[in-house]
Image 1 (cartoon, rainbow, N blue to C red):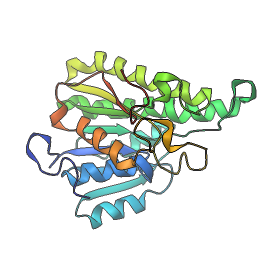
Image 2 (cartoon, rainbow, N blue to C red; image 1 turned 60 degrees about the horizontal axis):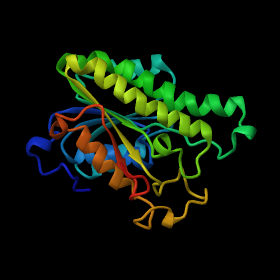
Image 3 (cartoon, rainbow, N blue to C red; image 1 turned 120 degrees about the vertical axis):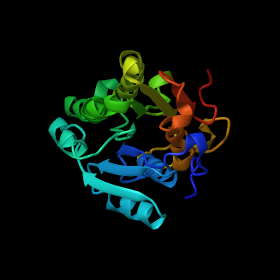
Length: 247
């Protein structure tokens, strides 16, 4: 992976510390690779062992360490982040999709699981990271979804609600932490060709571009927002959905 930021300059991440959650596979893994290709030292977190992502980054010439961590466990996230020398960029990509069901058929345990990972997990990760980010300012990038903006394509109500909450969280964080030199932005992908949506019936023609997104196409936008090049962006949730939702 050459990386959209790898050319250096204002966008380069050389010497910077980055943390990416949900990075054992899919979008999160590609974000970690993009940041590493740009020179960042990346800490990869996932509830599953992220060793494959770490190995890939190292094989591509980057620097990475990995930890199997449940982002809904605040103490566990804090324990990992407390070992970092600094933190310049945090990308929260950990998420679950849940069952595609109607509200009539939605159960409490399913709601707790999806909102637990997608909302509480994002909050707890940011909470654990803020002391480090406040030292010198930094970037927070949260993975949202077109579902949180327009009600989704096929997603269930709990997933839609969780991503809408993430978008609101981005705006709250942008307002409250600006004085500490922290920017907060989100990315709202459309349907991405990952294991999360495989077999769920998404058609390539759901959007004007006529195909599902590739994970690296989302990762490049997230990596930009995590970089010095996005220094005057905060409170934005950037659409990357192939034209499915515009404006």
